[in-house]
Each structure stands twice: as C-alpha cells, then as structure tokens.
Image 1 (spheres, rainbow, N blue to C red):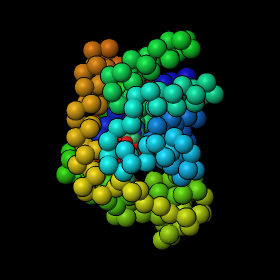
Image 2: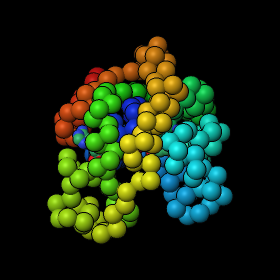
Image 3: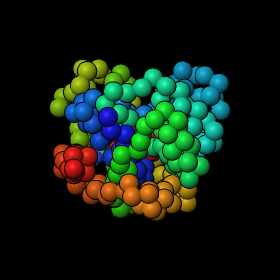
Image 4: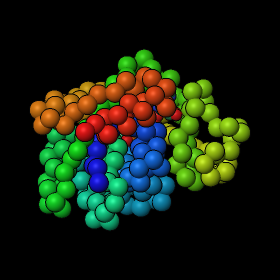
Length: 216
Ligand code: AP5
C-alpha cells in the first residue's frame, strides 16, 4: 500500500495523473476539489458555503477540507491513497500527518509536478471533463477520440469549470504561491519530496511518476 501526494499549481496535471494511478495501481484518488464541486452540484449546505469562495479562486477553510479527507480515509484503500489538491496549507499538512499516524499509515511520497505559469493558462482554459465519470480532457492536448463523447464511459455530458478562466486563475495561482508552495520545503525536510516535469506529455509524466513510486 502506497500513500502519495500530488503537489502542484492549478492545471499542473494532478487530476489527470491521479486517474491514471487509480487505473494502473488500484489506488484511490482523494481530491478535495472534486468533493467540494460535488457538494456544489448537489446544492448541499457545504456547497452553498463554498461556492462563492471557489468561484473567486480562493481557498476554503482548513477545517472543511480536513473534515472531508478524514471521512473518506475512514473508508480505507487497499492500493493506497492519492491525495490530489490536499494538503494545500501547512495546517492541512500537519493534519494529514496526524490522520495517517492515527491509522497506522505512512506517507510514502510527495510528487511535485513542476510547470510554468504560462502553460497553465492554456491548460485550464482548454480543460473539460466528463460529467459522468470525471475523465479529464483538453481541447488541444488531450481531446476525446470522438468529439463530445467520453473515451472512458461513452457519456456525452461534458462540463467546463466556472473557475477555469484567466482572471480567476490569477487568484488561484497567488493562493498557491502564498499558501501551498511552502509545502515543497516542508516535505523536502521530511525526506519525502520528488519532482517530475509536468510540462512533458501525459504518458511521459505518468512514466516519471511510476519511476518515483517503484524506486527501491
Ligand atoms: P481543485 O479542483 O483541486 O483545482 P486545482 O488545484 O486548481 O487543480 P486543477 O484541478 O485546476 O488542476 P490539476 O492539476 O488537477 O490539472 P488537470 O489534471 O485537470 O480545487 C478547486 C478549488 O477548490 C480551489 O481553488 C479551492 O477553492 C478549493 N479547494 C480544493 N482543495 C482545497 C484545499 N485542500 N484547501 C482549500 N481549498 C481547496 O489538468 C489540467 C488540464 O491540462 C486538463 O485539460 C488536462 O487534460 C491537461 N493536461 C494535464 N496534463 C497534461 C500534460 N502533461 N500535457 C498537456 N496537457 C495536460
């Protein structure tokens, strides 16, 4: 069982690679962004509380996301967890450490997906996802084989995110540099950090991640 964090700015490719790892290794993706978006789609109280914050590109409170992760970790995962978009602050990182040690688990690897800001605008403005199975696509770099039809499940329910525009991306990036990027030093100091080139093609990034995970 391997527990890992995919760390990187918005559009770095965390979700894309998490889905690959689920398929290849039977791991379970825990994306706080997806959990929050689901709450918004369902119109729950939580969804109503976070909708405006997320549309502005700001982070929701630590307490909310720590609670979401804790609930999901209780379900367990035989192949291990892929933490995608969590932790995003030092407080969340400490909480994850506590949750793992309380359940007798370890954090095996933190993979920093390195990209540059210029590429991220094109990445997020071209992104669309399958509303049924969550598969992630891109208008130019990763289109569906048949236009408008999901390669994975055949659904035609494709979605675009409200926060995937240039203006909101600026706030999301600022939040990343101010609050999340300190985690790079945090996990380096703990001896858990590895970096991969997130600008490479999707398959090449997947191979680089596999090399990190399979390192003896
Ligand atoms: P969240 O949903 O986590 O969004 P994010 O971190 O901004 O990350 P993204 O989903 O935008 O990008 P990604 O790295 O997954 O890239 P993807 O694989 O899709 O969070 C949304 C919001 O929720 C936050 O702003 C915040 O408000 C809130 N939130 C969530 N977690 C929180 C937390 N822990 N604490 C506080 N608030 C929280 O790829 C992007 C595009 O690029 C796709 O189109 C894809 O096809 C394409 N692509 C991917 N890889 C490649 C490649 N190698 N080459 C070319 N194209 C590629």
